[in-house]
Amino acid sequence: MTLVATGNAIEALVDAVKTHLDGDAELGALVTGVYGFVPAASRQTHPYVRIGSQAILQDDFGAMQTAGGRVVFTLDSWSAAKGPHTMRTVLARLLVLLERVDLTLAFHVLAGGSLHCTLSGVDEEPDEDMPDRVLYHGRQEWEALVEEM
Image (cartoon, rainbow, N blue to C red; front, side, top):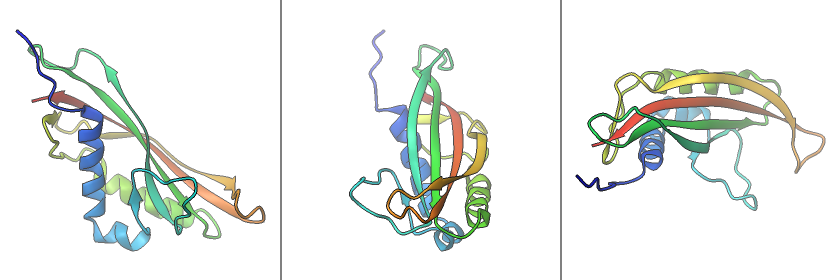
């Protein structure tokens, strides 16, 4: 039996997450956008969300010789507000929108209820472009079990 790869599980999940987040008016009122990539030469207006590092841990999740694995990714959020409250509000909304939600993926299946946040927090970081300003960096780590259709 020859298996034919029908796409990338990482991209399928990340595309579904981005579409889901883009469709939420409440999140849209909190941030200026959700981005998959923010070029270093481009400045985005704060606050915003970026879908960060992504990987797939190939394990034996797939059944019946179907490829599968655990997809992990980060959501990085940035705010220049005075204090971490804005960032905590954004992170809370992300949790409401994604925790255990079932998303439709291209050429893949998300195991029901497997999309889960494993870490969520806010840190202060210096703004490299404006040394007298502090940015609040919200970071969430997510994982989900995905298999090919």
